[in-house]
Length: 273
Image (tube, rainbow, N blue to C red; front, side, top):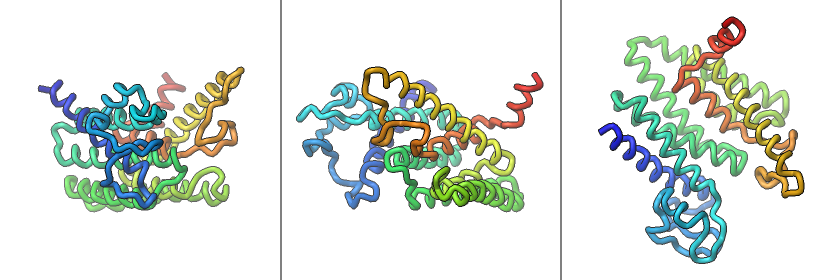
């Protein structure tokens, strides 16, 4: 039964991920989210057999059957990542239906934010507002279950602290270090991790960002030897490249929220084993 549900949640996540791909591509373009999917190169309307999440991309080897155009691997990555996220959320909250639904909705929105930021280097206000609405629901739900109104104030302070920290970086650097959208997104994410986790979320965000960025720079140096350079957001990747921070901020949030990682505990274990 557990294996069956695991597969079902992965399939559900992959199907949702297929729709999220549409949102990522069409959001703020004036195109309807309900229109038929088509090849971005030749415009051919896709049949049902070409729209099966994960399966169709692999069966077609990432190319259009009509014109042979290259299909960005982002479509496969989003479907697989959403499927894995749904499966993981189910394993964590299988016995808490309210939290299960809450986190399924949350991770779906975060997937859109991450890949939209990677694609456009911007976080739409509508998506941030949706996360904020969920954070408020989470805050009042937490206060209700704990029978403690002070939880609301505590989480609001945590969100404000995260937001002001990024706002300070944005203001001092005039937007060169961090985007204003990151400061806005940090508010609801900070609310959900609370005062006990907001500092760890911020530190992990920068740690993850540093590791991934350095790894990409190292890969770029390897590819540079007699080959085309690694392209990131349409430009060669360098130490001065503008790298979207939302993916790192979301990863920092997930590390704290799902794994309850604490930067102080980790530091103590490293330096005082």
